[in-house]
Image (tube, rainbow, N blue to C red; front, side):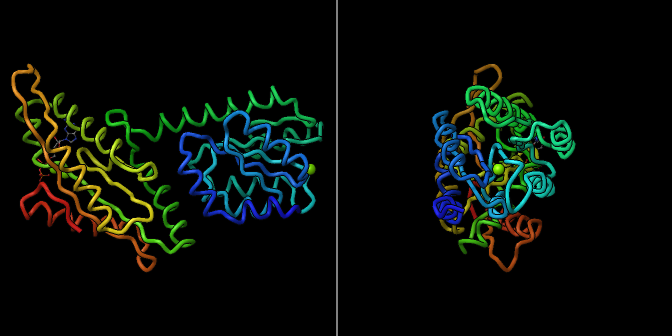
Length: 315
Ligand code: GH3
Ligand code: MG
Ligand code: MG
Ligand code: MG
């Protein structure tokens, strides 16, 4: 195994950070023990504006797969230490509700191997030597499909933030990252104030506009790697990676200041009104990793914010 690729994957923190920073780039995890080909493919694929993590050691790829959270995985079938089909089996075991496409590449032209690949859950099977132009199109098609499915299943229609299906997966990813870097993260529970009254006074449609307006401000003001989830009707969870509770509070106070100054209009445009929210923040530590427990703690802080008069953020 060439030391170049060994080093690249071993520096996983840096890669994960790079990925967050290049959020709009799609990440491909490429696994092949032929390092010359690996290097060539990485260069070729990156011409297409994808970020490629090229790994020659399949076990390292399996171990870092979860943290990398790739948009597509390309696996060579014939490797010395481990068959690509076994890699596929192990990755599929950890996936469950993920839609990450798995593309097998191989010099093997037999029908048996192709059938086996598809049976194990491969999304495509491409013969070597690879025709680069066709290879690119097939990868692109798989990534497009993955993104479309994720949008459909994971995004809330009204607010365009993630729905609850994305919560456990995000939380697990943040915990896994905390175990590597020992940096705590924070969870905030946000609830709009007197929202029933908004609906009662202005109607449900206007209420929906307030929810969408709130979510838009939050999406714009948060950092790229913070994650917003619509947890209930007018309740949102925000996960702040590598962030102390007091730092998350500064961000939320700023969002609250902006939101509370944002005017909303009644149905007939004749009157304007303003809304506020309350929020509770809980820092997540290594000694208490249970998601439900941490949500309850954030909810407790939110309850305090409500009882202290609303329109505020509590730790
Ligand atoms: P509090 O300050 O204590 O949170 O008061 P509240 O009125 O916001 O609390 P409550 O939980 O009693 O009411 C929440 C309201 O949010 C009730 C429900 O009608 C409204 N709501 C929930 N989901 C939606 C939605 O998708 N659209 C609209 N328009 N309203 C919603
Ligand atoms: Mg090979
Ligand atoms: Mg509520
Ligand atoms: Mg409320």
